[in-house]
Amino acid sequence: MAAIYMDANATTPVLPEVVEAMRPYWAESFGNASSVHQRGQQARAAVDHAREAIAALLNCRPAEVVFTSGGTESDNLALFGLLSPGDHLITAAIEHHAVLHAAEALAQRGVDVTFLKPTPAGVIDPEAVRASLRPNTKLVSVMLANNETGVIQPVRQIGEIAHAVGALVHTDAVQAGGKLPIDVAALGCDLLSLSGHKMHAPQGVGVLYVSRKIKLNPLFFGGLHERGRRPGTENVAGIVGLGCAAQLAGSFLHATASPSASPNTPPENPTALAALRDRLEQGILTRVPDAGINGAGAPRVANTANLYFDGVDAEALIIALDLQGLAISAGSACQSGATEPSHVLVAMGLPEERARGSVRLSLSRMNSQSEVDIAIERVAAAVSRLRAISGAAAAR
Ligand code: PLP
Image (cartoon, rainbow, N blue to C red; front, side, top):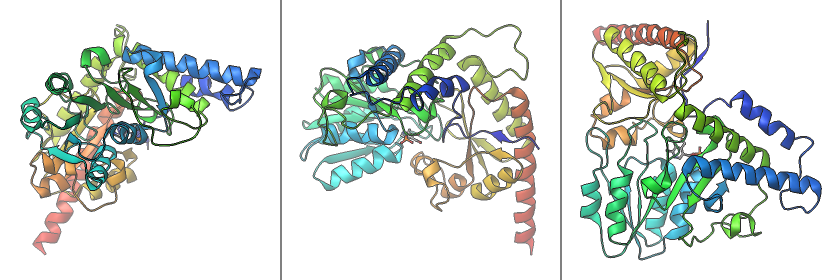
């Protein structure tokens, strides 16, 4: 039975080109990027090269790129690096826990925090941001793409509203990296988080873009790495992998599809990836009654499908599909195994039962149309089996 992976929002497979780019930095070029000798210089050059690749992806200056250990650290550095007791933070109830829990910890330390609710489609309304502004609003942090629904947030409009009163703007773009073109100048954000493992680089490396106009307090204390913003010996191989993945993401985002593409050709650009995701959703919805798409009414990134199946328990469906060789998830990976329904779907106003019957299928450019067609059959069969079992149990 073919094993199919459709959980790219949890983590993506590292692309072969990325593995090859990283390999020398674990072997012959193993130097510390702060060392003066040649091995150190090689490592430094590789980190600088990766920094330029990230800057090109985000349309910023290389000096504005801070390498971190991942999306969680980037989000924490943005929030804790800027906010002090007495400041006001506006964020959203649909943020990833890396922002939500950081905001809750800041609230315990005397920062005023407003958590905005989304519309039923999962969008944060810029007017809700405007209505929440206070004289002490220091930062607005709203994600660019939601990890569970894929819904794209109006960060540019939110930024204009925040900047008009002198507040700064952070966006968690972890789920947008490699899926949407990101231009920090056009987006008008002051800080932006990315994570390597959501864009075909390895786990444990990320980026915080910090506008040169901003003075950020570090979270850690040590050497003067990353211009004093993030001390600690650089993860050279990881950073090289992220730089390579950023270059490949840039090519993917701007590629034109070749006319010879076959059903087994992986999607060559976001339009082809969205077509694959739409085929998956429509295929499932035509076969499965009492099901629907969460976030359907909003713009979404190309790869994410969040579907509800009434009368089905999401955890049971995930396990049934895993046994059939299809890897999917419910909500964010760190929540899987927990019995709580997704905080994102609940904030969107889904009834708890429906939130508990929702799963996420997230594709990457390594999935093919044939895999999508197999996944449709597996999901339809598993849902109907689970409904038959729970119907039989209810009749007993
Ligand atoms: N932000 C979002 C939107 C995410 O989806 C994730 C991971 O799922 C993170 C932050 C955390 O990133 P990392 O796993 O690199 O710490």
